[in-house]
Amino acid sequence: MFMGEYQHSIDEKGRLTIPAKFREGLGTSFVITRGLDQCLFVYPMEEWKVLEERLKTLPFTKADARAFTRFFFSGATECEWDKQGRVNIPPTLRQYADIQKECVVIGVSNRVEIWSKERWEEYFAQSEGSFGDIAEKLVDFNL
Image 1 (cartoon, helix red, strand yellow):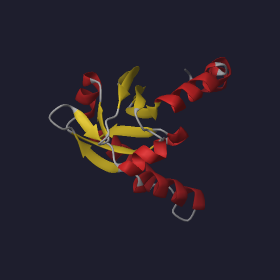
Image 2: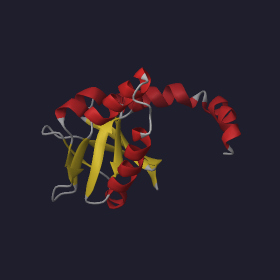
Image 3: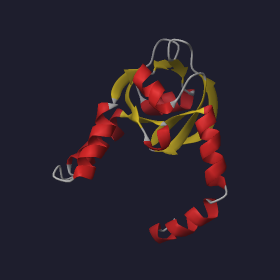
């Protein structure tokens, strides 16, 4: 399980150091793709395969299903660590998430998310005030 929030910088070559405890959970090979809310999702390979199987069951005759799977898979890239424990994030994904220098790496249960620092601060500020309302809506899910 991934949890926690860490501040990091991406270098001019697009390399980002991921916290050691996240690297261990992600394994030697993992997938980075476009996430929701303009962040990047990072999945361990085992979790990616589970997600891939679920997405395969979506009806390809539905426009929303086709759009979502295109969005999700077209941005996906398999990655590995360099010798310094960094990952090279492709330019298209950095552009999508507006990651230029400062970023935030967070653990979200079965995945890691990478946010530009500015976007994360905006998202957190907007969501913080409605956290109680969100929790109330999720009570039906036995949380």
